[in-house]
Image 1 (cartoon, rainbow, N blue to C red):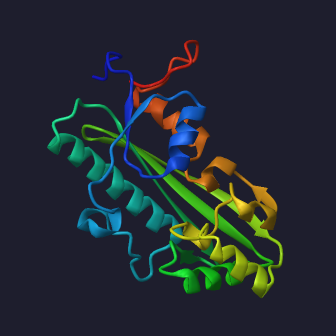
Image 2 (image 1 turned 90 degrees about the vertical axis):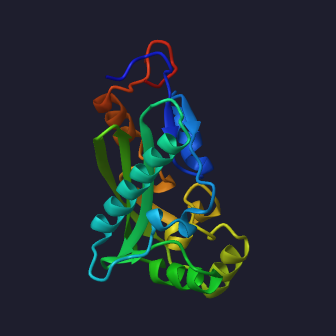
Length: 215
């Protein structure tokens, strides 16, 4: 049974955007960082599986991250609290655009998004003991047409590095977007509505009257 003594959750993510978004809705959290980069951890393999749909991919990776975070909490003998994890991917024509391997691939991704609509899917999971609650946010984003030089200049800023779909909506890429249908925070990497719903389901809801959150 979750109690209200510690009043916090663990965030299994290195993303500063996810920290900012959790703080925005008043959820108290502790960082549960991996000692190595997630890509170097066989338990958090973000490689795609042939034939896997974008939805199945983002759900699978998110669940793996939550399970790995819970395992690390136990290995470090930390106080038991729910572990929050999330994963974001971009999809165009049902093709997964994960994080680009290099800036050449980042430019290719942006070319494929230019003048088109695409989907951003973010899965968020909250694990406590054997229970895992998971939700997926799906948002439609339309880019205006981008010129080759414009893409080159954007990629050179480094903002596309390590970003699903090779862009950050909260940064310079905001000027590329004609329309968004869905969750802005989901495109940033943590859909706030779905996250709050999961926290409530698992009993880690923040005290709306007091303005701080946790278990």
